[in-house]
Length: 299
Image (cartoon, rainbow, N blue to C red; front, side, top):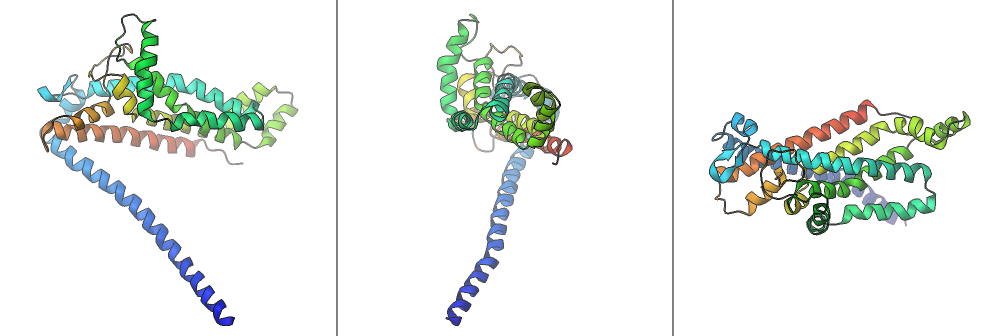
């Protein structure tokens, strides 16, 4: 009996010592993967900028790699146009949904609505893309008669629909973290339910709300299939949402599936665009973390 207990204890000690090593291995794999991605991006990007100057790449206004025009401004403009439209759609709807779920909905209603809302996050983006192309674009063409079937407006709207669950879910979590004592104190002073939400809950959850918005923007910037299918493949330096445009991610898809020879300038341009996209999303994530730390409230 004593020997069995000793063997059991020894096995537990072995597991206890093995768990940190396993966790360290998992962390090392994550770091190594990130380093590998960065190395791949940087090696090809450096090769690209040995042939194309930074000035031509970032200040040029025409993007046509197959005719030796490498001005990435049209792709950046298209990406930002899609992102602005998406946030204009997702922000009011997502924030309103978060306020309702956190402050007004009953527990039963919340358990029904929130899973349904989060189903939007599980729909494949290629399905969103065909939805934008076959339903949203024809519907919008009844309003804008001269609108191209491939356009930034329908792509941006559907990207906005896709990121609604991100804003709604993360904002609701931030609001639920606000102690009920603050709500009760405001109600005790005579504030209405809406005043409590607007003047107490939302300021207290401000850092979480802003972080959710920034992360949603980052997700919209990196979206691929919706804009590839619905927004077109025309690098166009414009702010007109009814025109066909091309985003950074859409060009990466186009360049990767085209007849591009290995280590050619066109091939390397895919990585240069990818690095530009990586910098965009990295800056948005850094901004999100800064805002979360800067405006975080501890209760």
